[in-house]
Each structure stands twice: as structure tokens, then as C-alpha cells.
Amino acid sequence: MSTALRPARLRPTDMARLGTSGLRARPARAILAALGIAIGIATMVTVVGISASSQEKLLRQLDELGTNLLRVSPGDSLFGDKVKLPKNAAEMVKRIDGVTSASQTAETGTTVRRNDLIPSGISLGITVQATSLDLLTTIDGRVRQGTWLNAATERQPVVVLGAVAAERLGLLTPNAQVWIDNRWFTVIGVLDKMPLAEEIERSALVGFPAAKEYLNHDGHPTTVYERSADEAVESVRGMLARTVSPESPNEAKVSRPSDALKAKAAAAGAFTGLMLGLGAVALFVGGVGVANTMVVAVLERRREIGLRRSFGATRAQVRNQFLVEALLLSAFGGGAGVLLGALATFVYAQLNGLPTVVPLWALGGGLGITVVIGALAGIYPALRAARVPPTVALST
Image 1 (spheres, rainbow, N blue to C red):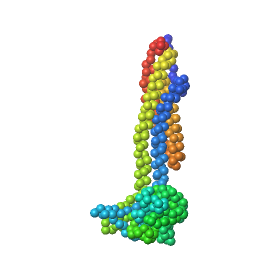
Image 2 (cartoon, rainbow, N blue to C red):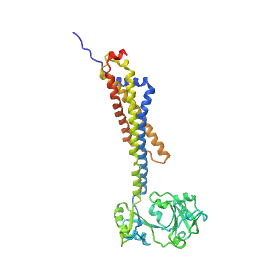
Image 3 (cartoon, rainbow, N blue to C red):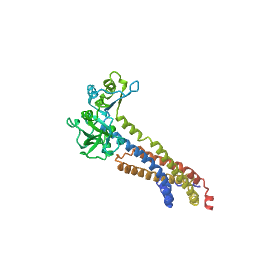
């Protein structure tokens, strides 16, 4: 009575050892092949991480600054003329239900210069604005150096510089003087950054009484800032234009400064698709490299394949061995790419003052993609190895 021969069964651990032994036999080639996968995954993880970190910073700023600040500015009349807001526009806005504070500023049409020797045409992008005393309360601003205007100084030739204006003038501390409309003004304060009022950052601020006396300003504001309760923002927004311009509400423009930050948060990921595409190209090249490495391995290891087949290894076992090698090769590259991408995101975030955010889906997706790439790259070499006849392999 004869006993049929049955092929030996290989456990998953045995198959894993076979796969790693093939990679260990040629470490330099394995490293170079895995490097292509690592570069592609690292690029994709880094792009997603940097975009997510930038968005997180902007969203945190929104949470801190709030979305309940509205801004009103004059529009154009039917004939194209610039309209004027009433002088008491801020007081009118304060009467709206839900409004907690309101203040106003006005462009004076003059420029500020470091001294009287600089030509008047050089403005450095800085505007001189008159302001009400409660401006910082409304826009949640802070004085970095010196003091803010008060009931006494708003009538004097003194000025408070926005953060950007101070940098451009080279005056980061108070008690200096600047030249405004053929008169010296004393700098009494420098403001901190204001993400929701960037126009204030680029301004030199004087009191309304001083603007009227020294700069011949007519007292009409060009911007009204309003802060309201969160639940009242939309209702207040609908009433602002009619309040400051009851006869022609369409001649007043109402905007929400926080919308600009939201737009920036959206724009932070605008180029993510392009960079992910570049990462996908690098990943594809890496997959081709893995496939090429495995094809060469099959050609070089024909004798090994023949010996294994002659000792009873089935085609399926040979196929699975080379498929496992390709999967392990891609997994090593993918794991290294995920770590490199997370590290690059961390370094970039630290250098640019951003919170480090690497979405879990990016990490998991990166590893998942490497498995797919490994499977696709290893199918053809594995099938080719399985089709090698033992007699042909041993005869070479």
C-alpha cells in the first residue's frame, strides 16, 4: 500500500523568516529599493502634516480671537462718489441689541515719516488714522510698549504705532518722534500684533481731537468696529448697514474679519493636492523599484528556486515567498517614510512656531498604501518565480 506524498505546510512565521532571509542576503539592494517607498510616503505625510499644523494654528487663533467682530466701511454712491459715515457712527451702532462695544477709526490722508528729511512720497505703506479711545477694547488689542491714548493725550500731537508700522519705521520702543503733516508727533506706544485688524498693524494712530486740530480732519470715520455676543452676530450684521446709513444701506459695507482667517485656513491646504501628487509620483517610482528588485532577485535565485522545488516546495509556496519579500520590503520603506514624514513635520512646526499635528489617517494611510504597493509590485515577480521549472532552474 503506497502513501501519497503531501507537501510540507509552511506557517506564517516560517514564511516571514523566508522573506526576511532573502532581504538579508542582499541588504544594500533592499535598502535602496525601500528608499524609494520611504521618500514617497515621507513626502505625503509631511505635506499633510504641515498643512494640518498650519490650519490648526489658524483655528486656534480663531478660537482665541473670536468670530464676533464685525467691520463697517463706506461704499460708493450711485454716481461713484465715496460716501461718508456719520461722525457718531460708533455711538449709533452701540444702540443695537446684542452689541457689547463699538469704536471707529478714520484715515486722515496724511503720511508718517521717520524724520522731516524723508520725501513725502515715501509712505512705507503706513497710514495715519484717527481713532476713538475704546478701539483696543473692541478689537481685543494690546499695547506691547508704552501706553495707549487717553482723554488727555488724544488732544495732543502724540501717536501710537501699530506693530508693522513700528517695524517699518524702526521704532520698536516709545519716546521717539515722527514727522506727520509737517509737524513732529511723539510716539507714546507700540501695539502688539492684531490678526483680526491687520490694517491697524500698518497704521499710526492719533486721537480724533488731535486729527481735527493738527491734521485738518473732518471727523467722519472710515471704519467702524463692532463686537457683539456670539449668538447675536448674524442679527447685528443684518442691521449694521441700516444703522450707519439709514437712507442708503447699500452704501455701507459690512464684513467679518475672522472670515479672512478662515480663508487662510482653507488656503493652507490649497497646495496639498499638488504636493500629494508629487509624493504619489515618488511612491510610484519606489514601487517600480521594488518590482525591479524582485524581478532581478528571481533571475539571480533560479538555482535556489529549483532546489526548493526539487525538495518538495510547491508553486504556491515559492510564489508566497517572493510576495512576502516584496511586502516586507515595501513595509520597511513605508515605516521609515512615516517616521521621516512625522519628524519633518515636527521640525518644520518648531521652526515656524506651529503646533505639531500629524493626522492619524495620514500615518495609517501611508502604511496601508505601502502594503498595496508591495502587493502590486510583488505579484509579477512572485508568479514568475512560481512558474520556473525545477529542472530548468537546476540546469542553469
